[in-house]
Structures are given as C-alpha cells and as structure tokens.
Image (cartoon, rainbow, N blue to C red; front, top):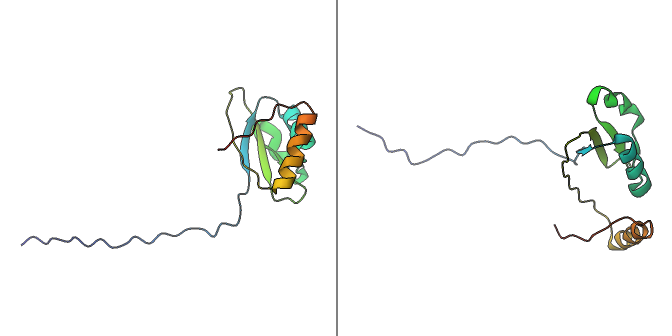
Length: 112
C-alpha cells in the first residue's frame, strides 16, 4: 500500500537578531590615498584598535565619528565596483553635494 503524503512540514529557520551592518569591504588600488579621500570627503578616520589587521593584506578599517559606519579598505590591483548607499537628510545631502562640486570632484546623481 503506497502512502500519498502531500503535507510538507514547514522547516524551522533560525536567524540572528541583526542590529546593523558591521562593515563593508572596499577594494582600492592605493589604500593610503583612499584613506585620505574618505577622511577629507566623508569624515571617516582610521580605527586605531584595528590597525593591526592592515598588515599582510588585511583591511584598513575606517569609521565615522559616531562609530556607526565602518569601511574595510583592501588593496587590490583588480578594479572592483562597490556601491554603498549612506542614509542622511535631504538638506545634508544637498550641502555635501555642493561641497564636493566646489572641490572639483565628479559627482553624479544616480537612482539605484
């Protein structure tokens, strides 16, 4: 006698309680000049307690003043496009956009 079992039990999924994105990996050709660019244009600075990671091909971790945004800069000869969308107010975005334009940086509005 064959049993026709069409009922599938729902699999229990266990997920972590995520609080934020810890960091994003950014691949750059020159970590020193990239660190300067992020400091001058986004206000991100080197995280001193993670400096030891930067040796032997590890990441150079930079963060904002509030320590809520972390980027891990890796050196790579291969061009790898990375897109990060930061959250800010409309007024702050317009002010920052104007600042970058005044510095002669190529800036393009993009709806991603």
